[in-house]
Image 1: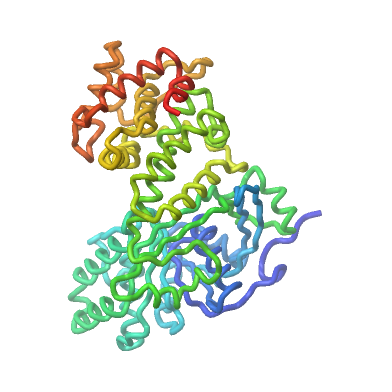
Image 2: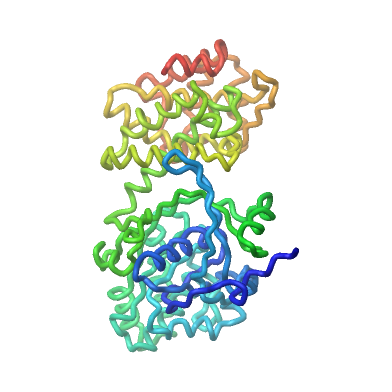
Amino acid sequence: MALPALNSRTAPKSVAPERIIQFGEGNFLRAFVDWIIWNMNKRTNFNGSVVVCQPIEKGMVDWLNGQDCLYHVNLQGRQEGKAVNTLDRIDVISRALNPYSQNAAFMALAEQPEIRFVISNTTEAGITFDDSCKFTDAPASSYPGKLVQLLYRRYKTFNGNPKKGLIIMPCELIFLNGHHLKDCIYKYIELWKEDLGKDYEGFKNWFTKYNYVCATLVDRIVPGFPRKDIANIQKAVGYADNLVVQAEIFHLWVIERPENMSCAALRKEFPADKAGLHVLIAESEKPYHERKVTLLNGPHTVLSPVAFLSGINIVRDACNDKVIGKYIHKVQFEELMETLNLPMAELKQFGADVLERFNNPYVDHQVTSIMLNSFPKFETRDLPGLKVYLERKGELPKGLVLGLAAIITYYKGGKRADGVDIVPNDAQEIMDLLKKLWATGDTQKVAEGVLAATDVIWKESKQNLNEIPGLTAMVKGFLDSIAEKGMVETVKSIL
């Protein structure tokens, strides 16, 4: 028997005041932000719904409206040691607009008194200033341009009322995303100075004083539409839902307070913490950004070549291997964790959460998918920790150095012990350099050549890493050991 279509006639849908404008209708926002707001509505007095605005001309708003903006979120993962697989129907989106074909309705959002928040995920390319945008465009092509058009309409509608400013929380994956967005907003105000005329000073002052732009960090893996599971999911929920979105159970949202609002004031307006959610409103996003890069991305970068060269293909299997699992734990808890400045109890909890995420029974995360551009990743994710560890402990972190040697070995290419092809993938200049160095057959030259490659590999730090005491000798030693004994025995030697 055919399942009923999912819409507000076949399923209940709650009604709440439209308080949030959301730029972006993709999987991430629907499985992260809208799921968080759904939880806030259930567990606190937030009582708000979301109007979704499509940031580009072609998008998914017709699909969303076709289901009356109802859809299910399927969360999968491991929590407190147990496998979790949940299905929830999300009903917080009131409607979805396309500003390119519904510009009047889009601009009218600025006139709604209860609107208080703007949330976005327009991809990293979305927070950009385009000086070809005109004030009279309907709408401006860039997201910041559209936002300034809305803000100005709101300023005029409410005569610069201090209480009608907006709290703006971008979720684009850019460090200090709010700072970049605020910079773009000011550039548009300057670009459109003549259009604003006598309102220029007043509007700029109103935006500066009574609007609140936050930098945020978001963290949840969202694979998206569950193609292989969709028939079973639709059967389980009892609807032909074509907008199901699958995500991991873990979530974290760090919101840096804007300079003109206190943490307490922002928590009062956005009470996600009272809903029991991992939403932190903090003085600064930076330490949490460093924590994520160091304790999640850092171990990923070195475990991948070590696991692959040990004959392991899946991240979860690496975590559960009696040798490689101990290596991952060593790198994360004994080395990288020692380089951060947050409270140790907090770091240990985050580290444990990361290991549960790596150990997700529902996701077969191939280690080779993490291996793309390994050298640039090591430079941003692991090299800073290597240096801080040496500075604090007076010795090199063997696990991280072995990870670097594993990357260098992986880039040699050839075949793994079991005959599987080793296929490195990076910038051509890096590939050419490694090919040339390995052609010498001399691991001393390989180690020295890689560590000295400031113009090819270490472009950000611009440091000849041969200058780090003991690093060249340790890298060479690990290269020799991997070649002679294999990766597993080399790992055992440092545990």
